[in-house]
Image 1 (tube, rainbow, N blue to C red):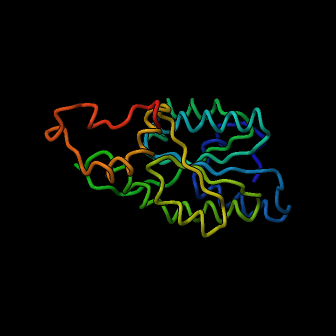
Image 2: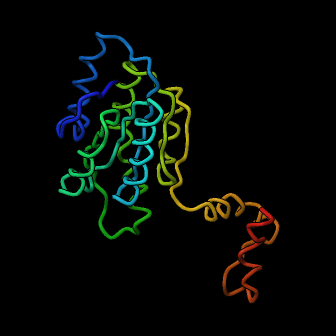
Image 3: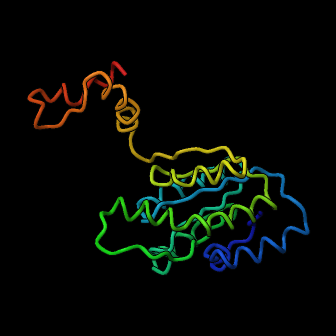
Length: 203
């Protein structure tokens, strides 16, 4: 799917509107330029780093990108201004709102929002698959429930981690730390270095 014209309507199109456009573009064949699908977890803090990655792919490397976001902030003026600033190679699609119970812990709310959005996400990816050469599906750590869906369409999967390198190194080392030292809690650790594990120099 191509998105070469910049306009508020283009960037903020809902899923339903996108499906209509997809059907129109099927007649023109498949765009063979590399196209990346990105899914942002709920919240501007998740959307902004992913959008910056999309911007760099489009501006510096010639990719086209469909940036899919949840509906939590879609109606805000901040969100509208942000997506309007995206370059022509990046199209923004908003998932339909989903029902999530109140009072849930924030990480559970984010994860459930992603899970409940899977049917709409499937329709979007299916439409893109018919019109674009999809070379990657990118999501952050809260979007891993979508990976089976991407695999069904034969799209290579990538996790985007916007945190610093130390946190990435720690996350990758935690399984080995757990196996070698058992499950450690602050109350069981008098030595802070034993809780944290090896220094980054030895990773």
